[in-house]
Image (cartoon, rainbow, N blue to C red; front, top):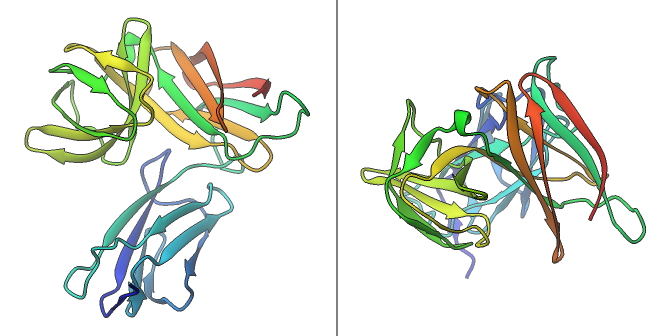
Length: 260
């Protein structure tokens, strides 16, 4: 059933790299069309009514990957959704000299054609860069939300951001869904990481996709180590590839062409 709401919605946009306002201009398409913009700034767009439940917002920008979000089904005349979106930098993003980057291009193994929209996971594996430790055992199951208590070093984890949990040689990527009084609700990207015991390290992580030309990258800020270990996981259509390497703080590394 299609429900038309008198209430509007608020979309707040962040730069996934700097966690601040976006760089450059952006444009939002709505499906179905017709949503009216009440207010727009470099950080926030406020839509006035009417809005249809399930309205899709496609956010486009020269410097960022296209992001899509959907108006929550529980939106109502009494509930105005506030949706935060972290825009992931594209290859056209104006990185500065001294930013820490790992770039690459993915092509198909059979025809060496660019592989667009491939999932990209970046895990930081260096113990010197840990942000906290698990206070309890955690079973990593993809697509399932888990409540977990984490003892942090000096700052809270950020909602909707990705982090790596490490124990020995294994690691897994999770996203923070919300913060609670007892800790965090997290969701793992996939269920291949296994179980992690109390005391496992929590480090920076990233999840993004390649562009239509197969170009991709992982990017990190505030890395403590001069040289840090990383794990790169690439996947699309049941195919996957794993690489491990090192990146240097404040330097750009180009891995060249990778086959998948």
